[in-house]
Image (cartoon, rainbow, N blue to C red; front, top):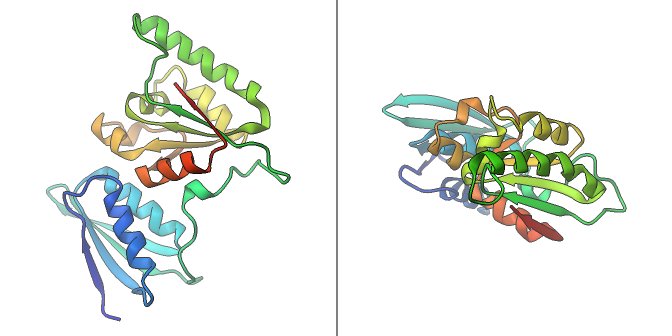
Length: 208
């Protein structure tokens, strides 16, 4: 099959990833194709998705905020694998415990006083290990992504949770919006497809 070009310029998250997914799920998927994206978040999400699908993803900076993600089938080959959302954290073993997902969309808890809200968030993350084996995944969206970046008072707590086997997903579009893609220090940059799938797979969702 001839090389394919997926023009994903101007598409919001998770459309670039979904277009790649649809391409790979065709009856005769291409061995090599190029994805055009026009922002850092899309570049990161597409590259990570393709890597999980056993593709080699090479990124070229075309200038003006445009990137070419050139995908070629890796040596292992094979069909597309499940998204990151479908894979439980490495520390979880059979028989599986209930999967609790913590959905954090702010860098504070509650409203009224930002300083107090920041302290409450730190206390909340410090207490999450009390959930035990049921704590499966933490998703950071909107201002919640600020918790995962360099200089965050909560960064050490999140790193400890990740080290214990808790999966942490950090919204790439949100990081890009706040100009924080390069400052992320914990978790996997992700997209809305993995967020939605995670919510579907979770036995319980805690929203903060």
